[in-house]
Image 1 (cartoon, helix red, strand yellow):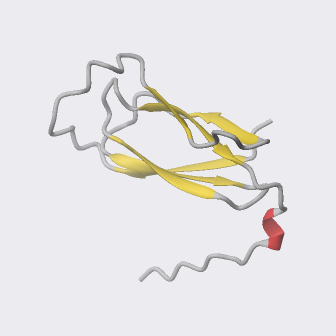
Image 2 (cartoon, rainbow, N blue to C red):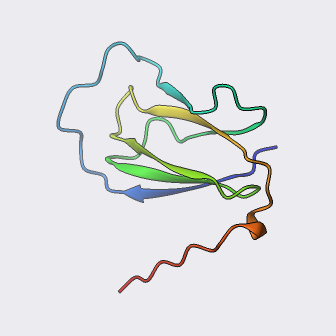
Length: 98
């Protein structure tokens, strides 16, 4: 079971550069080398356009931003190290938007 919450923020703008031919089926993002536990989720592939996913572990509160461009070399999955604390033990992030 994944504890990851994923939110897309972007546009349908086309990419400005060619895709990287080294990744014809997407890129698996894995930032957990050496971590004893992790959370995993697949991403919409290819992305709907240029933008980014905000990925947050609901178990420990750890997060990252993953960018994409709507091409075949976009990230197709993400795995992040889980620190094992409950999200309620972390300070809340407050975003003031106009």
